[in-house]
Length: 341
Ligand code: NAD
Ligand code: WQD
Image 1 (cartoon, protein in one colour):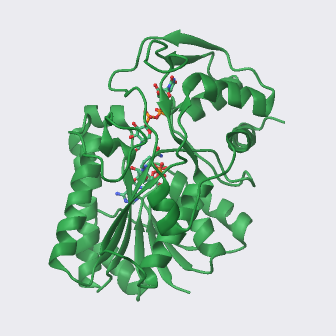
Image 2 (cartoon, rainbow, N blue to C red; image 1 turned 135 degrees about the vertical axis):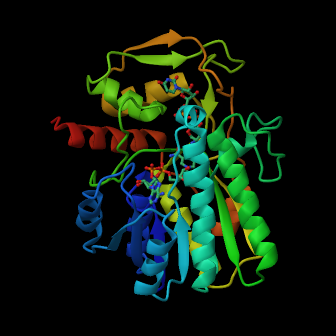
């Protein structure tokens, strides 16, 4: 059993990862400032696992409080760092807030880890670092494109900071996990995504439209160079994604890594179009999603999906939950939080 500090552990991906960590017998300390989550998520974690993880209501940018937390829970064997702001559009409006929270937040975390001799890190990166790749599926060797949003830039800068820190500290090990599009909820419907306001992401918009909260879904563009004209992404089940974190963490803890910094795509390897996503939801649930075709969304890329062979081999892991099943979990979660039978 290792002591794992999870920043952003009450958020969407963090909460699912905390569940997997507990189920793999790790002891978890959740650090979250509740800027995009609710404390009630702890109850959901407890309902699934029967374990209530330690919770510290702390902003990671507060060095003193974070340091006190490391002292209180010493020794911390590793950190999984989810805490960040993640809305691409909002980052264009609030770049300073995004650079502060995502980049300064990481610097504070690394500084506190250094002070407490904690040398193991798993970091949430994103496929956004690839932009529109010239070759598909996109491998970890693909050149990174200049970021098209402050959010995307924070992920590139954070990856560079971690790699530079590794160069300076031979004991430090990290994995940079580049997620594609996480979707779905825990099969228990005890935890899931809790988007605030109007969702930016496709699946929460689909489920809210199906629940009658939104009148119709706008499909952003049907004139892309894809088989049905709508944009293509690699949608990965959040529980599969969470499991990859445990696999990656265990490599680091067991000193099994090939390199001090391992970079991994986390996706399914299959591209799915927006229209196919709508139809998969309808097929999975029997609920119709009203939609119309709208202009392309500014900044969207046409198509991207992951090369998964490196992650599959390295982590001995595969994201293989069928899309239909994932859509059912997303719908069950939406129904639960809306009180729909
Ligand atoms: P989320 O917003 O649901 O979770 C982030 C959590 O971090 C929230 O609980 C929030 O309250 C907390 N937090 C934010 N700033 C904090 C701070 N300064 N101190 C303490 N807690 C703080 O987001 P998510 O979807 O779970 O994403 C987790 C990570 O994965 C993020 O780093 C995000 O950039 C990255 N990521 C997400 C996606 C996606 O589509 N969801 C894709 C690729 C990468
Ligand atoms: C998916 C597809 C939309 C809503 C974002 C971030 C990326 C990463 C994952 C964090 C696109 C279309 C959407 C709607 C639609 N996050 N769509 N109608 O844009 O691929 O990626 O989340 O790192 O950085 O950019 O995800 O879910 O917003 O969109 O037609 O109402 O669905 O145009 O083609 P995206 P998304």
